[in-house]
Length: 292
Length: 299
Image (cartoon, rainbow over all chains, first blue to last red; front, top):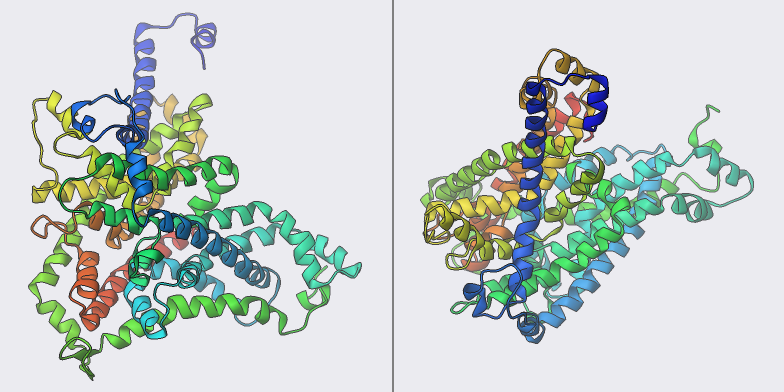
């Protein structure tokens, strides 16, 4: 509401009311500014440090680097293990997203459309990820993988991550499938469409936003997960980015601060990019995922 | 059309739903349920030396944990850590959620930005906080310097290291709290607020007296959510402080990490896993009861 409309309605605006209005605005603006600083500033500082020389990190306090350099990024790219970790992260991320969608879509369809013994498992599905977080799985899965000789295989990571996101993925798909009108399927059914073609040509296209949401969710899980990578990998060639970044922070002696900043930025940027492009699909899914 | 599902949709048999859902159910059972059962089982055994023959010892591992001052220390540190995260996170989340609920028009873009820390891995979060809390060049110390507080050693002072870890944890999880509380605030009846306005309640007074009592369920859920995120946080702590200095930030997950991967005491590690999962289950039960009681988003 602008000042003029208020003035139109109330020709005489007493000074106290104006002060009150300003106070109210300040009470909204100050926290909003604080929120923006709290969220963005740590990342901006990291971005800034990633473009500084090692000496300038302490010598040049400015947000805009005085002598911008790509040395930080170069040191990360030249780091033994970065490239394989990057490739591993992409492969494991895409693999997890694909496997999750492939397994979750049919399961969710069954839960959404059929009355069968076992459909009550859905409730358990919604609680399991909360009951059993990745940290709880780290050591048992590590021992199991050692027994099975599955340590250091990318497929092991893909399967483990898929297991942890699957309940949530199924749950999100069920919600979506329930919104697809049953009549649509019944009509196709009358026309002779099989179960497969109903899922493929009616349910899936309508659930496209859900597929994107679940895909991004699964990718995020695989891209950011640390605990399970800690448990399930032991050789340098099979790690993913968070583990490699963790190792970089553990180097004793002189810290390569621009390098660490650059590494962090490189793990963040691809995902922020995906997120910004798909924001309208993903936000509700991501948050409901976390909250449910 | 009131008919059983089977008669309205054909092209399948009675086995179809089992075939469709089977692979997922098997995956989840094998990867989530079985490992926990396995952990409980292994925690009932012990070996005299690493790799030695396994002997059944019943609950001795748990008794040993209770009598182990190092482990009890980590339980205490966990309580401090979780409490600190709540004390910082809930008021901050509440203030930000209130501000966001008033952010209209062009300011709505702030809601999109709010979620970003949640998209960043714990390790990258730790790296960011190592940089901004750095003793020599960190931005936080620079700002504190303006107020005459010089040379704060965030990572060598035990109390400050704990605080730094809490801040990083809160930063990482606050988006969930904000969005949960914001969701609650958006459902608060606009008419009720208008009525309060007429009665002369404005700004923060209105927030305190009218809105907060109405979003108590969301506040409880946010509290539980932050608690279990903090309870099971390992990457942030490991990359930020490694559990130090002098074990100040050695929470239960760090103790688990050390038992499993440093000391290689598998049986003990499994017992710690079970203890952590127990605390987590208590929180989950609370979450479930609250969300059901108030018919909130969570099932």
